[in-house]
Image (cartoon, rainbow, N blue to C red):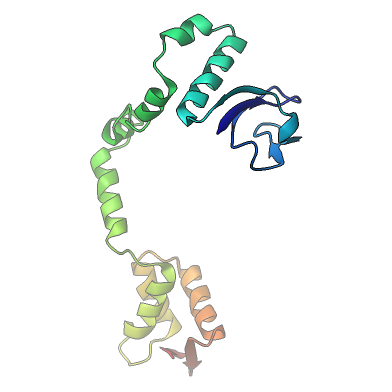
Length: 176
């Protein structure tokens, strides 16, 4: 059972599904709580789409647009059309002044497994430098070449050590 009800505070009309099921209902616009037994039911139906159509007709009448509403398709049909895009992605991006191919390429690159800054610093600790254990400068250089700012790379390295995920000895680092 669906009922079209109205708020006595702000005049909002909304659908209430099975008004007998709960004791109270809250207005979606103003948030006022109403006792469902005291709400005026402007329309009731077992069919949700019929209740939606009745609410739409009441809203059109309230705004003096009943004649215009009569020319419009059923609300359920209009709702089904909202799933169909009016403008495709390429057209939208190009209208915004963006190169759609470049955006698609960037999305592909991002989806193909780009690394986080933390992962890059970890990788730097594992593989940077000529010795088995790289220095902070070597780690920062490695990370900087892969897009991590130097200050951020140093900070991430210190965090790894504080969390016990890396250690430093004699100015050289290793992952634990």
